[in-house]
Amino acid sequence: MPLKGIPQLISPELLYALASMGHGDEIVLADSNFPSESIARANGARLISCDGLPIPRLLRQILKLFPLDQYVTEPVALMDLVDNDKKKGLDVPIWNEYKQIVGNNVQFEMVERFQFYERAKKCFAVVRTGESAIYANIILKKGVVTKNPSKKENEDDAE
Figure (cartoon, rainbow, N blue to C red):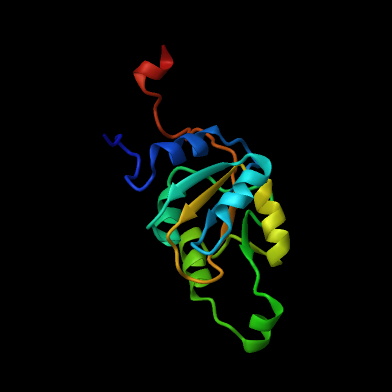
């Protein structure tokens, strides 16, 4: 049964991972071509299955619950094109979609493919999605969750 205020795309397992992460921890949203199982197994990261879901839909919902790290210049990382694809001038439209979702003021780090794999091995969790777009893999660095001082505390919270 769903919870109030929690987007239905966020599974209990994903919600638990997002809540368990600390400031600076990273999570990978992996496309369907990413070696999710072996990357997660490499360092004992959680492998969370969100099969069938496109990354942009999931990203929108995660960012409702998850602040990006405001203390680093690039809290989002993308897998960069390999040299052959750069030479071809391959267009990656999903990156523009990510920028619209995350916000134009957020800087994205471009990470070489094998460095991206190594970084992903150190992530808190790997989320396997059904995303079919190429170069759709994205790493998010969790920021600090702060209280909104303009909202009154719930009476139950004050006890």
